[in-house]
Image (cartoon, rainbow, N blue to C red; front, side, top):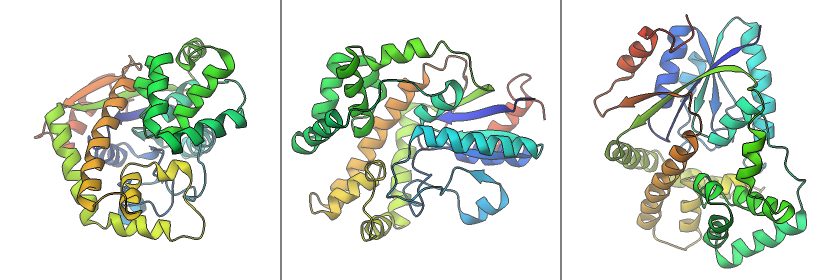
Length: 312
């Protein structure tokens, strides 16, 4: 039998992790982290990783599997996830996939886009433009040739912006058009999608509180420690929310208070990008949460609704 996957998705900071851990405990499940930054070791505070105590109580996978100096790809995520899914299934446990990285969600459900091979000369040229003129220049160019892709890809995600521009240069077609054609393949796993969403005001309030908690927990110290390591951070790690902005502060580009405000702004922009991405998963069962919603109430509602979760 093929494993059945239950995904808990939503914007950053909406409460996915708490609900996932609660359900894992009640359903005898193990969790696969659907987060492109929790894969990195020693990037703990800024990625809001579960505590060591929680990780000891509830098995989590795809956390701390790469060095911050490594370029971690969607292909690597799928490879490691498939191994974890098989191992969990062999133990007779349920599989919960919890997180908010839409590209990894898409790759795990539908497979990877088999686009043109990388052209290093194009990539180097675009990367030099990004450094020289700013990453927003590349993102505006992508908006002109592929509005759908630019809506899904955050301007800070320079690697994916460059890939989209590269595909257009090599094929003459927007990457979103090619991916739509490829999406017609059958799904790779029997799965269900549970989405959490909040009113914008509540989501923004939670974002601000989350940033304050991270700063109080020592995010600046964590970023400084990473920069002091003998091997430089990868492009992906340097672009992580919270890290990119504090790197600019530590490089002397802006005061700390400005960097903190920029983290909040970029997090809100990233959440908007996530919402756009998640719209394409039309089969998602969305749950509207309020500031008063508790994890117990949300879990109870899910477990009581027939057909929403796999039977326990």
